[in-house]
Length: 207
Image 1 (cartoon, one colour):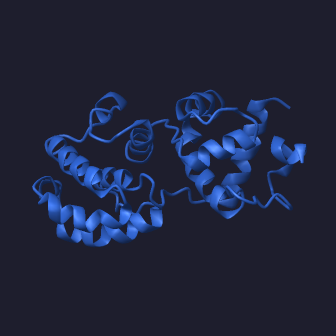
Image 2: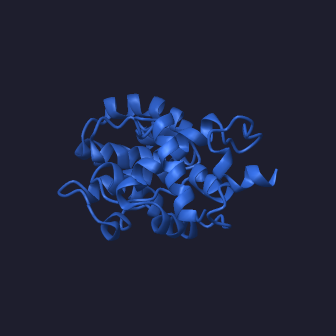
């Protein structure tokens, strides 16, 4: 069985396990909110970002309000997410840039302060429904454990999955990897016994 055959099996089984492939960031369908929350999620859990975002968006309910925010006040609100000074400045600067038009290409998204390929791909996949591979820590860990890649480099992992995963499946597949990485294939002590992917996982076979 080659890698493309294996990954199709993995995709199918993850679809059965997690029928609703949803982003864990609760952004209410508003692209600019997803951008802000994705920036806050760096080195922070999605759960904490969702909690912090409630008072954040109550205080700044529009892109313009966020763009005009007082930096000190914004820092205080986002402080629980860590790296709050840099994140607050990035958020204000980004919102100033997207007031007239929200970027819809990788090139334009990467021009926003603090936005790398991970955030750009998240937005392209979730907002614009384009093929996109989001290489977060779960995606990188599982891609290596499944034996599709031997690299911690996000770009290498992204390029590997772009070649293996059908374009229309990429965004949802990455969301499902997050759920699976948290439920079963955890960073420490993965629950390999009884795993529904055991027969197509190289790491399990090695054990």
